[in-house]
Image (cartoon, rainbow, N blue to C red; front, top):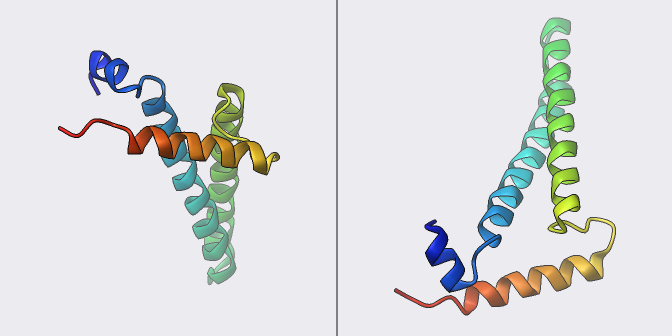
Length: 99
């Protein structure tokens, strides 16, 4: 999004947060899919390869989570704080001007 429009609409910073959350959700999905695939693998070679990919996906998830926690965008261990942040983001999105 254009930086000027982001500032005018109050979305500056929120765009990065939205992208990071989308990436985190995708990483969680990847972890879940690799874990399922490992349990369904038919040969030791495939199981070993999928396990390596699972470990890499877990590492990526950890890095994304740590980044978001550092930025104050993710409060996995404080449900009330996360709900408050989510409600604030919802209100920001609902108050965006329509074009």
